Amino acid sequence: MNFDGKVALVTGGTSGIGRETAIEFAKAGAKVVLAGRRQQEGTAVVDEIKSAGGDAHFVQTDISNEDQVKRLVDETVERFGRLDILVNNIERGGWPAVHGPYVADQWDLEMATTLRAKRWVFESALPWLRASGDGVVVNFSSIAGIVGRSGPAVGLRPADAGAVGRRVSDPQLSRIAGLRRTRRTRASALLRPRAL
Picture 1: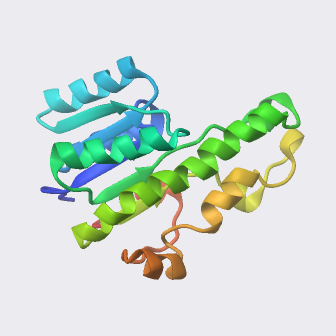
Picture 2: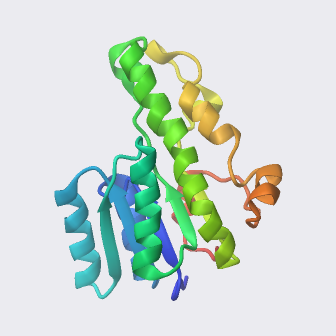
């Protein structure tokens, strides 16, 4: 897999799947911008990528804030001149599985991050993804939006259902966005090397 000359923006890039995704893109030659709330962790990932010969930049971002999302995309393009790949790795759920039924604050937080922020990041990045001529968007979300859960959180996770219900890989949205269509896949398949 070769991403030389490509620029990838990875939200939630300070830990977990986002961190590993950012590192793998850098290993494959992409310039990487990672976004997250935690400066120390973001700087550590950038240092790791740079020490391995890659090029990366961290932008501390509260993705629930539209102005900060716009600044994130603007800073990405100012730094690297383009944007080819958006990895929307935003997730703040999990309350019902651990604590029982939703409370209003948790519901609002999940909608603001897992659903609404993904849309804001996508909309801010879209003009640049179109301009690249081969833009790609990957939205990570929980499979609970499709199959639901058991236990205290019986049913679908609403924000995940919204996040996976309309995404760039759907043919209609792909045509509207002007991006190439990708097939639906499990997240584990995205981690296996293959050409985008």
